Structures are given as structure tokens and as C-alpha cells.
Image (tube, rainbow, N blue to C red):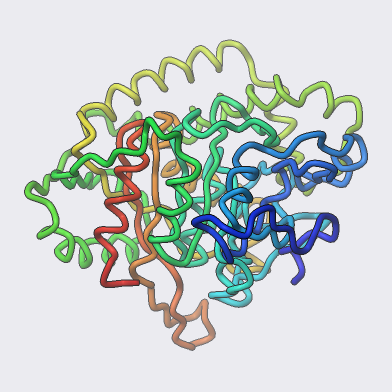
Length: 405
């Protein structure tokens, strides 16, 4: 499967024949260390300039000890610095749910493995949307966890101030099972969620078909919550600045983490990622000051939308459905799409809070872009809760989706 599984690493590895994940197949994004193996992090130069791991990443070790079977490392966008789902060196995983379209990135291989049925769990990371976007494009359940809740020890860091561990599955119950293993025990109590919040200004960041589908779906959720509330943002201008705020802060973190390696080895990247790295290495202190101030403002605003862990915010996960390969992958279009994606993914990312995608509806498209053919494209929506409410969020997702399993 081009662009899905890496050539290096074991094809079948089991550490335990007992445990809650016994018999469950695990595909692992190629930036989680496995003792004795090397990672590419999406870059041949990274693979060639780094030694084999002397220890397995903590999160991967926990899943293996729970009985899961490692089925292979999976490809990602170069250095995980893209949400496109394409790699200049290793190819682009085809979307199993929508052939001819991208899976989304950067955790494209893990998403494709689960969507195709060759794995049950796809282990990934999410810095700016690298689990949430593929989950939306491929029709999977996927969670980005609270920042620093699950240790990233032994995991390639893109921008440590935003990096999180995440995972995909076809069912919410398996998503929860993984959470029970990876989320620290002191955070495994589920709070009752009684308030569903929607925000028109956020919903309007998505294309009209997704907005309409969400509005049609919300009534099916209303009887699950004692309180359903529409809240308007007090600062719409700030919402429009989130993509740049995240871009700047992430870029500086990448420069601080990888600047020396990038300057020393000058690895080859695709045009869009190379442009992004040049930008990251040239961010000014004034830009950082502006972005930090805006981030603080956004966190305070989010606290008004979600004042406690009994509330959940429903938002579009992505502004569009999966991107078609070919003309839609031109660098200018990639950048435009990325900016729109960040406008949504930064909502949770800047607050460091958990977000879960629920693939509970599709978008039917029939028009000039599909050659007149009717195509059903995976979609859905996300639920966001307060920081470290991850297990409450997972439990809520399982509760809301029981009829869909």
C-alpha cells in the first residue's frame, strides 16, 4: 500500500498474549520509537542521521503490553509539518473511503491503515490537526488529547508546545479502550456532560454543505443534553486571526527544536513544506509577542464558551471534505486549504484541550467536480471539552454513538 506502511520495522510484533487489546492490530506513525529500530519522521535524511532507538516510546510500550499487535510503521508528511497527506519521498496514501482523494495529514498512513481495515487502531500525533484532519477525511473516530496529558517520551517532537498523542479507530468503543490505557489513571473518571454548546461564527468557517449537515444532525443530539445553548463569539476578529497565531507559535517552536539540524543537513522537502520551514526559521520576536497575546485572549474566550467540564462545544472538524489529488494539490491551493484548516484546528490547539472527531454523516456531492457522478464523501463534526477532560469526552462520544456501532 503506497504511502501507508514503511519498509522498515517489524510486520508483526506482540509483547503480551493477554490484556484488553489482545488480537487488536496496531499501525504506528513512524515517529514513535521502537527499541532497536529507526524512524524516518517522514524524511530519509532524518532516518540517515539518527541512530536506532534504545527505548520504546512510552505510549507505544503501553499499547503493546496491553496485548495489541504492532503491524508496521506508517508514513507521514515530511517531519509531520503538513495536513495534506502527501510525502515527496514516500508517496501519498490513497483514501480508502474515497479513492483518488487525500487521506489528510500528517498521520496519513495510520488513518489509511484503519480506514482500509488492515489495522484496528492507528496511533498518531496531533500538533496542528494531524489526527483530526485525517479522521474527518477518512470517516474515522479520532482524538487529539489534551496537551501534556499523555507523555510524549520517545516520540519525535515537531513543536513540543503543541504536540499531542492521538489515535484513530472505526468504532468509539475501541477509541475508549485505548484511552483507558494511555490516559493516566488519575484522569480516568468521567464527568457527566449536561450542556451542548454551538457557536454560529465557528460553524461558518466550514463550507455550506458541512454547515447544513451539522444543523440537520444537531436535533438528534438535543435529547441527550438537558441544556442546548447557542453562544456567539464576542471577538470575531480574533477568530479570524487564529490560523496566523498558531502558525507563528508553531513555527518558532519548530525552529527552536530542529533549527540546528535543518541548517546542518538541509534536507529535501516538498515545495509547500520547504516554504513553511523557511517561514519558521525567520519568525521575529515581535511576531511571537503578538501571537502570545492573542493566544491568551483566545484561551480566556474559550473559557466563556466552556466554563466547566460539564459543557461540550460542537464544531466542524474541517472546512471541507477530503481534497482531490491532482489540481487541488497545487502549492497555492495547499496553502489556502491549510490556512482554512488551521482556522478550525487552532480552536482547540491553542487552548491545549481535547477534541474528538465523530464521522456520523457524509456529504453527497454531485456536480462538475465529480464528473456528474454522485459521490458520498466522509465528513462529521468534532466535540471539544475543557483541558484534561479527555476521558469524559471519550465516554460522551461512546454514549452518543451507541446506535452507530
